[in-house]
Amino acid sequence: MTQDFSEIFAKYEALVADVDNVFKRVQEAHPECVTCEKGCSDCCYAVFDLSLVEAMYLNHRFGQKFSFGPERSVIVERADETDRKLVKLKRQAHRDVQNGRDAEEILQDMGRVRVRCPLLGETDGCELYEYRPITCRLYGIPTAIGGKAHSCGKSAFLAGKQYPTVNIDRIHERLAQLSLEIRDAVHSRFSELHTVLVPVSMALLTTYDDAYLGAGATAKGNE
Figure 1 (tube, rainbow, N blue to C red):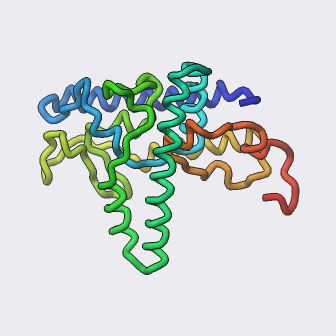
Figure 2: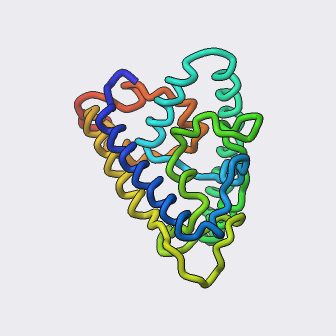
């Protein structure tokens, strides 16, 4: 990255701190239900995308910790393999939509797909645990997206019983705002830059330079 996004990243880290506090409160209130423990990697096989700000932040931290060397090469190789699998899955989902299959049914199928995260090490530990995405941080407690509740299949939260539930839509709104700040900070000529979503694998592989971000004054006809 050629530009300084430290202020925006600091805002993202503040959001992460809020999320961690929410998880801690739910865990303290329902310790018998939150079954997360060291060595459990169930959430590391979930398929999900990152907002622009999360993807760039993860990429930044990855570059800091693994600037070069064999460890970086191994992770990059895993990321490339994972990304090729995800591309195939998304192409199939797109074909299903074109063929008239119900979108909700497609999303449910995607939610059941398991693809190993490229940051999951050989001993089932996250290589960037301190900087893991928000989705990873909330996996073990009840969440709601679009009014529909979700919880980890390994947790002990019971269906039909009321628990504190994290509104993921609100978190997405805050992430979208931070992503918009990045677009505006670089004066991107790509008007929809802030809406780009990518999986962890692509976030690690991408070079977030001025060319990718479309940095510079907006020119008519170039959006």
